[in-house]
Amino acid sequence: AIGEQVLLMSDIASQEDHPQEFVWIAQTMDSKKTTVSLSWINGTINPQSSFSPSTSWIPQETGNYRTVFFVWESRGLANEHCGVILTTEKDFRYAVVQIAGLIARRIVCWVEKGDTIERGKRFGMIRFGSRVDLYLPQNMQLEVSSGQKVKAGETVIGYLT
Image 1 (cartoon, one colour):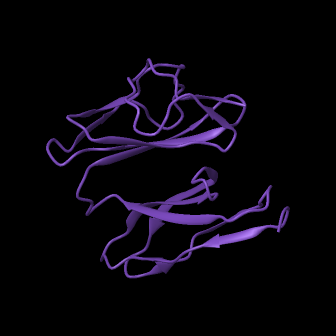
Image 2 (tube, rainbow, N blue to C red; image 1 turned 135 degrees about the horizontal axis):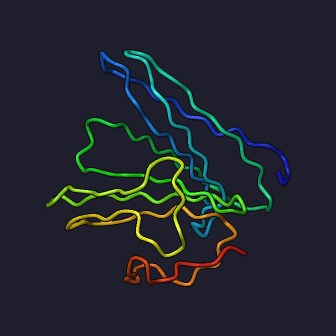
C-alpha cells in the first residue's frame, strides 16, 4: 500500500574458506521497468556462513513492482567489473557499473572512495569493453533512449528533476 514500508531481503552464503568481500544491490522497478528504488550494502561475509541483507522501501504510487537482487563478489567472476556509487551535492545517489567484455576483460578506474568528480569528467574506461550499467534515481528525466550509442563525457544521459 502507498506509504507503507516494505522489507526487501535475500539470503547470501559463502562456501569459501576465507572471508569474502561482496556488494549486494536491491533494485525495485515499476511495471515500465523504471527503477524506483536502489539500495546497496557492501561488506565481508565470514567463511562458510550465510547472511540475510535487507533494506526497506516505501511505495509512493499504486502499481505492480518487482525487486531484483544482485550480489557481486571480488573473486570468481568471469568478467572484470567495477562499480562506483555517486552522490550529488543535493544527495541524489546513482550507480555506474563497468563490465568488461570477454575479449579484453580489462577495466581502468581512476577514482577512489571520497573523490570528487566534476560533471562530464571521465573516471574510468573499459579497454575493448562491452557495457556500462547505470542505476538511476526515479526522478531522472532521461535524454537518451534504450540502445542509443553514447559517448563518455559528451552525451547527456538525463537531468534530475
